[in-house]
Figure 1 (cartoon, rainbow over the protein chains, first blue to last red):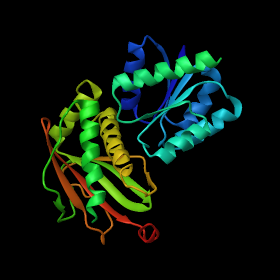
Figure 2 (figure 1 turned 45 degrees about the horizontal axis):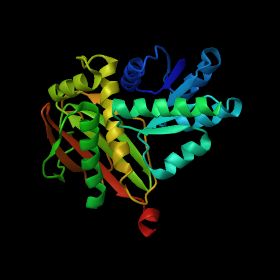
Figure 3 (figure 1 turned 90 degrees about the horizontal axis):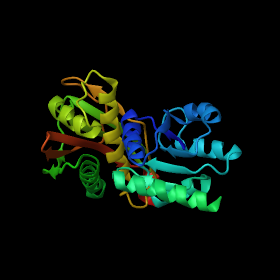
Length: 124
Length: 158
């Protein structure tokens, strides 16, 4: 299972990596914004993507829209401070499969990851 | 400034610090800021745009910032390391993002954070808008949120 974390904050990527490590996922790749992620997804071919919304160069929503042009199936979870309902709907419409609002507890992130993988595996 | 724009920052900082750092935040009496300097030596800064414009500064004394960042990162981080500014930036990002969700009926975007370190630094802000300081106290020490925001005319009329 290859997981791509996209967040401009290294601190946040480290927190997410720790949660993924506790779930037994060790093949974790990182990108610091949407543009960086788009340049890496072809080589990594991730099985799950966790993406922040507000980032420099290319934000998470733009990344999701661009990635979904060519990949309709890889599950994506938006992990962001954007908590308004309208933003959640916007992200879901763009193609994310699940949504986590920062701040989050490790348990909540863990639960969303399990939900997302369970849901997409069942649908496959 | 409308208190409805201050309360969300209080709720948000308490939520962010309790969730991510297991740290309780006690709020002291908010007051208008005088002078141009920031409250303390380390500032995480976010700009707001949209129906509400302005800036938010999360201001820490150096030692408080060091303790808070250590809790957030799970290890001591020197203020000279890029990870230190990264952590402070992410904290003000979460506090501001959480607060703007409490601005009912207002569509607001936040900028990527900037972090400034150094004694007596000044953050340039809108001169015609008052800054409200929300003093905070934690087991890691004192800190403050400095909020300088105003509604855009179109949002007021709505």
